[in-house]
Image (cartoon, rainbow, N blue to C red):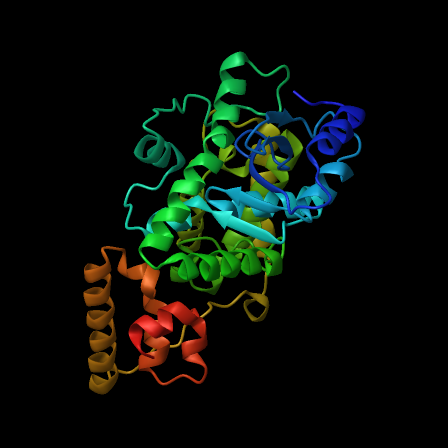
Length: 352
């Protein structure tokens, strides 16, 4: 375990080559299942020869790793989350990020979890016993260390196999474009979102229900922050929706018996605050664009989906990889620039 700034700098210096672009494998672990504010707790790193664990909770200055990654070609698996963590906590996303999950899916692999791919390509079974562990705790147990290292030990050898198969099938360019699109999306993605209380299921609520939901969401968020636990440990999203629906018709929510009196008091205050909101100030439903029944649109969409599915069957890959439904609907509807929602290789396959 590298847990000192000096040790990190020495390690990075030992593996750096100023005359070559570095290639490495990276994975990250966080404590989002155990804390309110997510922290980057562990970075697993491999350059193919050395496989190490890096402790960002203990290291004061992570700039040596940030500078290395800023010039590296980096392999990850399911890279979206890891890119988010690196961007948020180290301020860097490597200039080239390759994702074994994307590569395997383009080869037609249907079970593409990391453990599935290691078993498929390397004939090695990995235990996932530490998947939900609290990675902020120290010291890590030997089982946790083994689990963490396994997440990078096989990445580069597996990547070689995937790249060869992609080139053999003529799909390597698809892979490059898909990985770059995923990296660009992660780079442009903003942290946080507007109206975070608009959770799944909120679309069916009318303004009064949305008002209750908004205040209860902020109540839950404050409780989670004070407790330093994830918000789902206070209550789930479904419960917030059900309470909001009930309050609209005058039903008093049945709160869990284990709630402390202070939590109940703050809940009641949130309900009172919602009740005091004037109708003109209530949040409104976000209405999607509803298309009138249009036989020509439906026919064109069906043709596009059929064409996509036929190509997918011939290539033995998932149809959604060639084109998700949303851009196909935009194309069928004649929306300006709809084709730009697809990548070049996707448009060529569909001849769009």
